[in-house]
Image 1 (cartoon, rainbow, N blue to C red):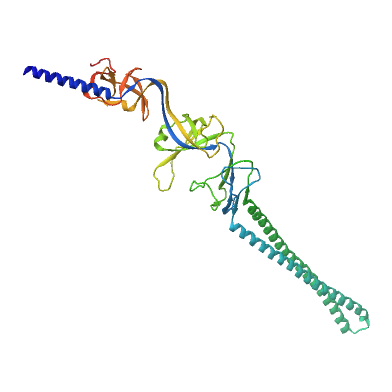
Image 2: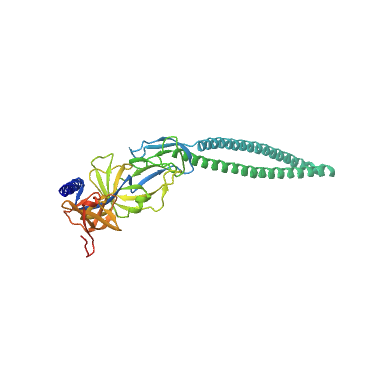
Length: 410
């Protein structure tokens, strides 16, 4: 009976050892090596020029785009890049033409009326002069006339003189009044011509031409942030087209709040381009705008604008408006011990790993440094060449414990 129990115990011990051996063989491990640690964030960006010429909608315009150059078209100086229809300005021009024609007609009529009135007054003055001359001739015979006749002749001469003076004053008054009215009409006509010239120039400016040669990039609408298109409403100083200086470019990114907090100015960035396979570039974060904005009115998620330089390019320069995949290197450590995050465990407020020792595992306290979602730098507690478990081993396979302090427990 005792012999039988001994045999059973031996078989059980052998089975447990075999099971532990098999379990140990099944546990995945990671070989500790030195390598570069990097913590990076991948963000979409848009290539933009640092300096550019912005073509604006003319001032005092509220119209509709009837033609817009295709985005990305190379244009020459003087080429038509946009035409705008402003019905209000066109109606104003037509009304000014009609009003100018009316005032011109009124001025012509006033001059004709004045000439006619002057002719009548001059005829009346000549008639008075003739009557006065006749009365003077009759006065030679007054010496033979009676006193009464002489008195009548004198009165007629006096009346003729008075009438002559009255006609002279009327001619002067009529001339002054009519000249004033004509001057007023002439001033109105000049004012209308000036307004007509201004509106004509404004209508001419609705045909927008390229101020220089270059790549025409269609601007985005201020409200919708989508590219402008034919049929869109525009008003004074609205950006229509951008013609960039492609000698120096930058990248603009819209970053969520979590990533924004990790990114710092001067962080390194690498770029790849969907439209240019095999091409890549490098740069640095140059600006972080602290005010977030929602991409839509009903969204509570805020994004922050981040700008980065484009300092070196492998092949050809990307065009403005190209999308790019931006890899921002938040942290970087050269030649250090880096282990996967899944191999690090929390035990009694300690960070530990399980180091393989033959067929068993030793629980080892470690000190960590920089980390990312996938990896962490081990500052102390591990050596290159050791193997650590990627899962927590069964308690039967854990043998011993090693802490970072001078006391060690086996």
